[in-house]
Length: 404
Image (cartoon, rainbow, N blue to C red; front, side, top):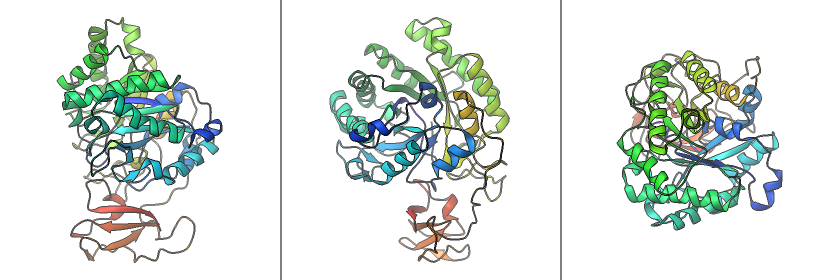
């Protein structure tokens, strides 16, 4: 399943806690329903929103931070997005601290679409688990998410390492919330997804849930997603020998809000359809990709998929409220004040960016910089009239360098 502008959703989710071992006591004590509802948020890409603003506007208490990968140059040490070593990180740690100070917590997600996964480079389940343990220890995690999708989930050895690592982490970190998510199809999941389930069965590993991503596969609204969940429910029963209620209690959904990579549209009514199904059947997980996209584009009906807005009419953070409802909360009714996509180029701490503001008529080549919405961006190749705020995904023309 593709997630070109949004990077991916989960295959195995584990629990999240403090920013370092000594900070674990500062982490909020959340029940598992919050980790089960945590929507994805990229802290370093796709114009990251302020998580505290989102929490206050929606009632959501947990987020799934994405993604942990192997270093782009190779090796068996964890990095954010393949470029930022976890060992030296302070920025994600600061975001996690703010979320916890506001009464929330995080899960950290590994994998996603694109990049090299640790399961591909570490060689064994034990080595892979040791790399992920660095992440658990660094941030005092109570939950973690393994997002196994193409091309990694087509690699038998890599899937063996990832599932084995999840099993080891669950054993070595009592109470760690672990869930596995894989690609969704009209038949529930495809051949590789089924092989992943069989790998988990062969290792005697049962996570909190197995979730599918029913989008980017010819889906048409919430009804088609419910059909996929029913098909996946049958696969779970047949694979593990579970009865119906046990299978539902180990099943989850990871959705995409708004316009998908494949041009499918999932509106608020579709999220209500899947939420009603999830709650009535007591599903174990309900999440979506992503909070970065949970805001209206400058053109609310734009016909392209963005990593920073949904391409459908909405109020800010409207899709995140469905996650809060799944967790059992009642979201605030007031509409938050948010920064529009065409906001003045100022930094969040006040003052103007020193980098010139982006211009729709200017031509930019590789290495040129521009600022928009308080962020500095660097062009990766020739571009004109492509807004940095909506074209700064992993495979887009602009690289988001963070706030000014």
